[in-house]
Length: 306
Image 1 (tube, one colour):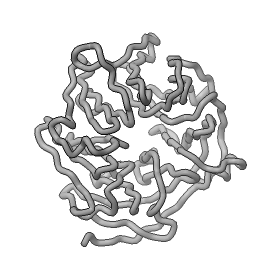
Image 2: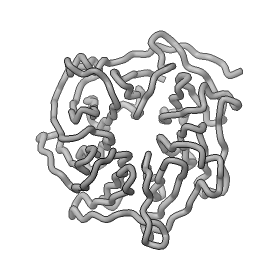
Image 3: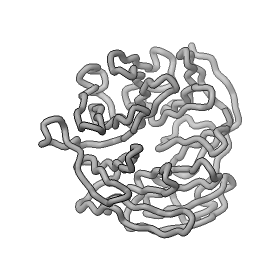
Image 4: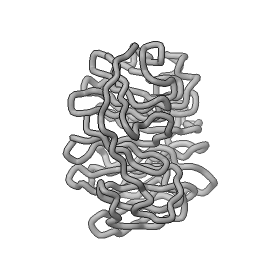
């Protein structure tokens, strides 16, 4: 049985900033030079708040904000359901639509590479690639150039500039320099059973893939993979988010609660008053000073200090 550790769980109620907010999917982002928390809501509202829940700014969009990215360029990018990709300048508050995609869909995942390309997942349609400097847009295709990746659930650009595409029942790795891709889930068949909710990278270049069928730790060369489930000690098989602290511990949110996984894969169950068990969380980020971890839930943002 995995050991337990009790810590304080602090939370910010979004209704403190948005009085009539009744709950739903939320996504959060922060810039490294600011303590402001940007929150995208499924009613199309984008707000910035401080950690006490005080409203700092408010912007309304036509569809739900299902993906949010604080870019290294200093701009905020939004995946807006049924509308496409938007850019917001936090300094001026100016917004513009970078890419319009017709249809009835959820935006599902945002990432960027060092060449100025923004990748937005369109659930049921594929991944669009938009150059933020030129505005040029393309669809991402598989190796034969004919088929798109369709049922997108998450996107991540790793330190080697490779794009990981999480989908319902599959995971692919795309080399952004030549568009060649590796169907990772065909190498590791246990991945086919899950929804790939969140993808990130540890300090050693290993990829951590949080899914509804456990968490997969994939070597950088994609030659090996290790899976963590309740059999190995995590709280629940359904893992929604994963994020690393300054000591390279992975903090994973499962429906059964929050777990910390050390670099040697020792697992500790985290509990306390107002802890995260029995709730759904949609995104996780580190604070600007790297001392806090933030998790966005249906009605609030939970903040912990590892």
